[in-house]
Image (cartoon, rainbow, N blue to C red):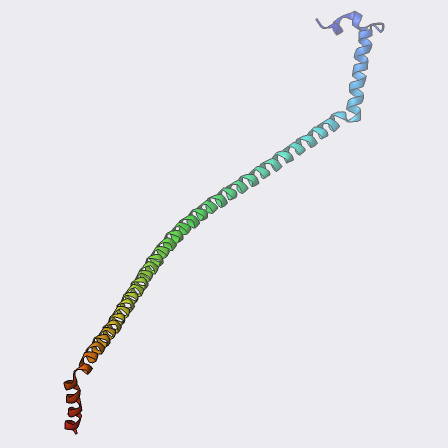
Length: 171
């Protein structure tokens, strides 16, 4: 059974009565001063601030998700462009390699033809030099042989007489 139903509770010498009166006076003053309204207003302000923070966080999250989607799209675009650039670079490298190979083969062919022409020219020059040397040697030998025969023929007087007579006959 509660203590306030006891007759001894209502005696002014009972300290519990004074505690109850003090408590009632305190609660009355607090209500008269508007503390519940202030506490309610503070709670409402705190709730409004929390709601504003939640709304701001929701807005920031939506912005972050939009930025993330944009960054992902940009990354995918950059990866696609990089792949295209890589393919183009590989194609260019293959084309340049083919061009270099063709130029090298053409240069090798030109140099081989030039070397063959030089060899043919050198062969022709060597053959001409050999022919010239052979002709000169033959001419020297012929001169030597003719000189030897002429020396033998000068000794023969009949040849000299025939030559002198030949001059007279031809006139």
